[in-house]
Image (cartoon, rainbow, N blue to C red; front, side, top):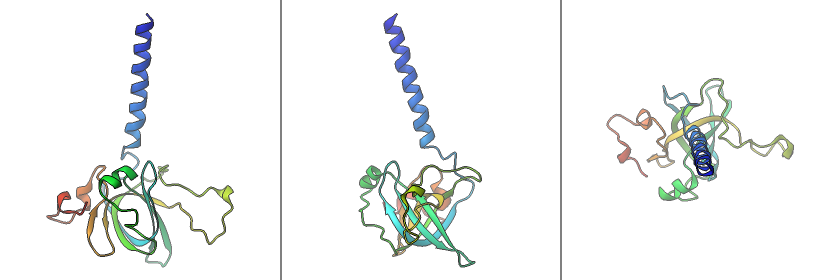
Amino acid sequence: MKKIQATWTAAIAVLASAGSLAAHHSLAQFDTTRAVHVKGTVVSFMRVNPHSVIFLDQTREDGQIQRWAVDGPAPNQLDRMRVEKDILKAGDVIEVCGFVTKEGVPSQRAPQKPASVGLDSATPSMTGQVLNGHLLVMPDGTRRFWSDYGHLEKCLNPGETRDSLIR
């Protein structure tokens, strides 16, 4: 009887953890019906778990600055992709193609500066509109594969393939 109970307990534990892993890697919170292209200036590139984040400032047509938090690969994935720690520096101008969060769906992926920290107004906010980044156009114009959770093909130029991108 104890053996059966232990087996059921283990099975439930495995199923419960599989659900949370699937939810974490899901694109359900993103609107994948259309790719969004954002060109802006890198504020910060953070190689953090569970996903790296590029904070990017885009100057909109009205002159206002829109902060973007671009979700990217985990640090171990970046290492496998041979992405160097200094690939992006504050001040670099890049373009990102990816997918924004759905209307009304909050993202828990971008780290936020706690209000209790009491940082002065000169410290940049690390919040922003979240974009699940799939493709980067680097400062030198090269196109780099960034992530393919879902629909990378919507970010590619006609005739371009995933294999033609820098990895």
